Length: 422
Image (cartoon, rainbow, N blue to C red; front, side, top):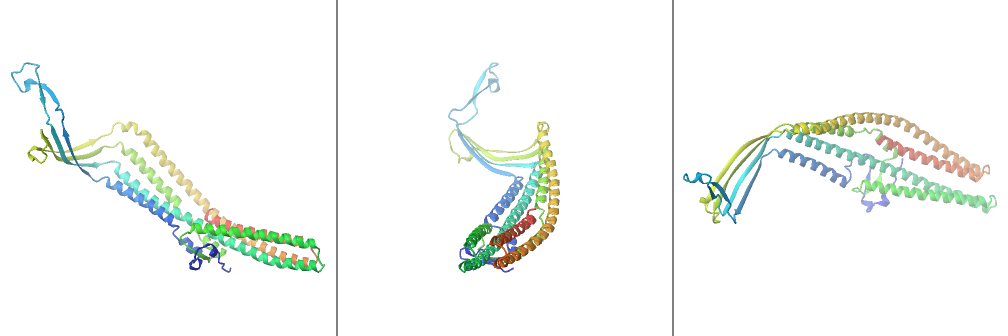
């Protein structure tokens, strides 16, 4: 099949543009927006994984503060604690603070054992895998849409070229009919009927041109980063290429990843019932004086401690039953969805094999119908010129030919679409 300049008129600087085959289109990495979206999704998932892993590290921070007691609080204490001769029940007011106080020090907090940590990291790791599978899915869907747009342009080009040839051919027929009318060998009504047919052909040509423009713009939308001047693959090459297409397993892989995430969520809910061990330590100092002299180190007093605490959940054993049950049901649901998807994928593969055989035979039959329709149109033209049939019979033959071509083009597009999207 001869190649046609298809998108040349719709591309700025077309003389500098490139040709594009169906295999080159399939190997493309999508649009810049698609690549940016994929990169952001994967970067977000990896960042969240790194954040979860770093959560196990100790938290170290410093704090400082200063307080001015405008009124020093007074605390009543038993007087006998300071004066053995005090009467029983006597109370002595004491001030246990100074006008100025301050503190400064460093804290370290570390969760030594967190039962949810392993599941958190496992879930984030699975989320990274899921983002990679989703990126493959986005790229695959773009490729399918781009191939269909490519196919639409090729078919629209054939349709536009056919209507151009029909217009040229029928202009010659119209000229012949006009000459016959002028010579008195045909009635003027035949010329008027032929003029109407010429207008119908002109309308079909306008429609074909609009279809070609729409298809070209759609293709340019799918590949905005490329300036295409020529599509080098014929329809037969497109069909051969997609016939070898293998349906990816990303949908099953995505569901398998979601099943694993659901199971880890179940473990995470169960881990809420387990104890948590944490360690805290502090090293710093406190300042006390009735005047503010922070540089006076004699007024600073050391303060340091280390503690180890164990948090044992009690109410979680009661209140976590519903979250655990919900997580278990979600995990079971994902398993069922995975089985359904596997069955659906197997059905689609069987449909693809069936479509391949059915469409192949259908296209072969339609091509034969087109050939016969074209041959019949030629015979009816000869019969009209010999005066054996009316002009309307020839027009009907032309209409049958156009309808046969239209059905062939639509079936070829449906064939490609059925392979990619069964």
